[in-house]
Amino acid sequence: QVQLQESGPGLVKPSETLSLTCAVSGGSISPHYWTWIRQSPEKGLEWIAYIYYTGTTNYNPSLKSRVTISLDTSKNQFSLKLTSVTAADTAVYYCARGGGWWSIWGQGTMVTVSS
Amino acid sequence: QSALTQPASVSGSPGQSITISCTGTSSDVGAFNYVSWYQQHPGKAPKLIIYDVNNRPSGISDRFSGSKSGNTASLTISGLQAEDEADYYCCSYTSSSTPYVFGTGTKVTVL
Image (cartoon, rainbow over all chains, first blue to last red; front, side, top):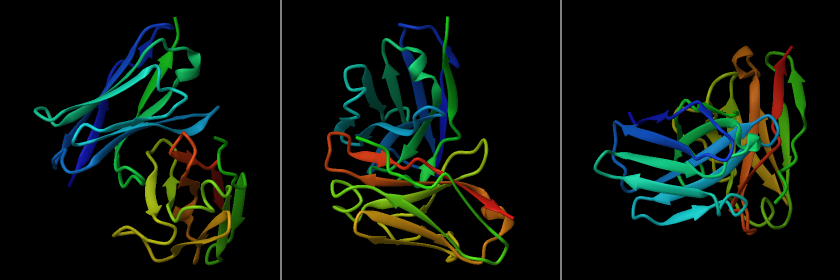
């Protein structure tokens, strides 16, 4: 069955860029939506962005100026970049399959923003 | 966009039924039949248990059911079991600038 696995640094310094990748195994990138969601004690669950297999994207307006989501179909993976991070971006980051509801999730990766 | 409102905690004895509410507005829960529910055990990723208000994904027990009335969606767990002890979150599509909003989360305790 389809599995998702997040990867990336667990510690990012303030003002730097957070970069995460989600590897998709057991299935194809197409014809699905792929989403990033984060969870913190302060904000709870927060939808970040999605990308359709065609490349169409949609971003949370509160993060839009700092976020980029992209696809690499040759590697069957998609990625998240969040620039100018602050402590408020500390959270568990999940990748998931779906556009409006999410039936497959990665295990999540904890990202801490600290110097 | 404010989070959907859920009770912080709900509890019940094994075998009982409990209902978790998820209150939004006429811009989200009340406007669309796109409410989903997720179960999350400690240290685990959320798991989809209801989508589009009252649909269960394959493999989800029929003890879980969803409904909606006005601006409030509800998740009912019948025949409560120890394994149901977890956090539960609702989510709705919205007409605001942020397309999806989650609920504040409810901790279910099986007594």
